[in-house]
Image (cartoon, rainbow, N blue to C red; front, side, top):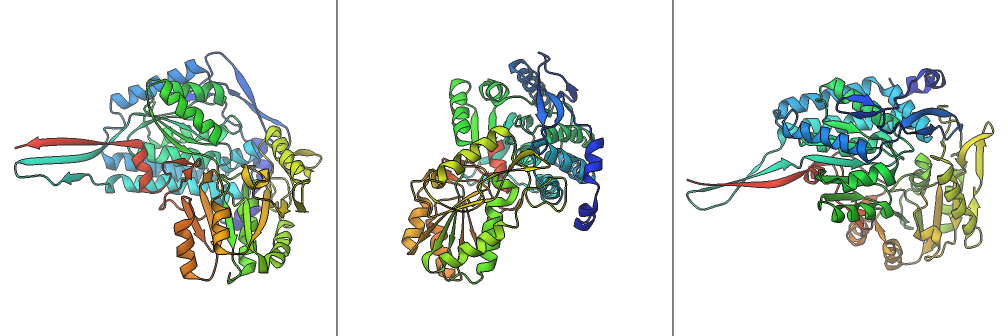
Length: 498
């Protein structure tokens, strides 16, 4: 469907007909939790109950890991020729495209994002990533090390075995894809633990993977609470690797779990407080203002790499802030299923209250430019207005802590040195943006900004071709690109003397 067709689609009508999956998916079939426990899956835009989802416990995680291990050891996936694994992932990409409206609705209903964003960005992106890694499978070559006469040293990448993937609620389908696609491409089996706030698209993805030809047991999904199912996966002695995206606090728990169990590899993509630097020599302030607003208000600010700190060079600060406030007015909370809406709902009541607590504290420490209030749609829902604070001090919580909501902290700088110091003054190091017409400055600052991705004259640039991840307490390891395959494989040397 084209964007115009998607804008005319009867999303509300289809939402009334959708039937979310609610059981865990283990060993190729849906199963309830052994305890029979469930948790409510709530639409944050309306407060309505979508379904009751299986609340997996340690025994369910063990079932899933056992299934994944059996699938790995008998080679039903890992030992298949690269061309066959490629064909399966390519079929899965096409099935994701064929089920675009259902998957978009599941994510929108589940966590409040705009259905048009899900339909035009998230679902096509997930399909593209499965396709990209599928295409990569039969183009990865191993190495022959330089040795003396009579010796042949072969260096190959071997799959690790069972990968535990723990993903967040802000991009439910995409984050599952970022972990599962490269892990499966390398021949691993996967146990996926979606966030308890947004499990629905992951459960449907497992069904589509089976339909695409992925053998039973290779992809298992265990919905449940992080402190129960996530902890059990992190501590499980037969999990070889944990790939995690989420908060820095929880990421540290997984490092502890690995030390307490089998020293499994742990790859973390954690929090961020990404800076956006706008210099007076920026060639297009209107474009910079457009993207500064997009960088914090897209997906309600629930983005780990959101440009939540804005630093503007003093001579243009007043003009730029006016432009930015005008852009913020275009982002208004609305029904996520209405294609005309420009901002969706916050994922749940707890996150809404957390965001509002930051805003309330900021009223006494900074200057509120716009927003700052909770909103409702038809008297319901978890909505927060796009909010901008100016004159934010470097030690203010608004500038230090990850809010994960539509709240922007704006400050000024006078010199390039000051701009770099402010940008790097954070425990995080995920991403940064800078706006300048000077090529020299772009290169100079890109070298000095301690982040995984620097976007010049844009914000939050990413693609399947480039690695995504950070430094410091934003974690380590990289999603996307061929480098992601390094997380899900180990180097194996075979030395032959002849």
